[in-house]
Length: 424
Image (cartoon, rainbow, N blue to C red; front, top):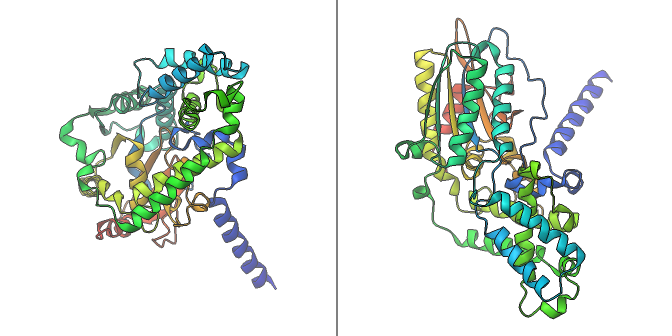
């Protein structure tokens, strides 16, 4: 009887673990800004207490790969197009009271975003300082030492400033750190994706994109929204692009979460179902473009050189036996394929059934603003086995493709062998 109870309990745990890894519509509705996909502002870690390492093991090296923090939209055309369209409707007396409110908020947002296309926001800077502070608190024995910090970023301003904020927070916590920061084209192939490695498309890939495009267009049914913003949508229908305006306002509304100091929001102009449907289209597009959806072209190969560099650096640090921290600051288009190549559970189990893809894999859990992958390495005196633990957005995660009796800890030799295998 006792044995049966144990079996039932184990099965229950497996079911709970599987369900918790999935994304549900209810879950999205409860945190509606997740519909922003890669616009989603960094939520901070859910996990407050980490699993302690096996007895005697201590951290000696951290490899931290991050996306820049919250940013302004990379192109202010969304603000400009929306303002121009609503202003035109206002000029002919067809803008509703709600439309007037939206137009005013757009002007406030645009004034703040002017000439800041793609720049790091104040929130983005805080995110990296807070991540650095939590890292120090979690691994004080390692990070209190006078160790060397090798920090490199993309040449993008938002990445360089993210690196600066992270490193300055670390320096304030431990003035003895030897921090070397750099952002040069010389190193870009080892920091960001190399588009020269992007594979050709395939008929299967093209079919997936066609399906995703159909989903995307169906999600942008603007009739309800236009009836809210305009007093008489029929009068402007021949010259007013409702579908274009809907997509434009979605981008502005979702990005406003990254400038909370403005105190304005446009998320309420959409229904939760509209946001959910648009999010599904963006989610599918990202996962197809990265090569995570079965049948899609393996775009993740653009990170091959970054992964090879990571393995080489790790081998060197292990050989030299010198406490070190390596920091890389990149983009969402690099973090997502890296998470997939590493085999993190959050990128596993994708399906070509695009309508249900979000249940298996959702990018808001992987690449929000300031997304990060931490690889923490451990060693034990008198033992040659090196252990490594993976954290995604500061939460412990696992690698389904590898077995480990001590998960979330893995033998580096197993991980290294997995990463050195030819990628399909």
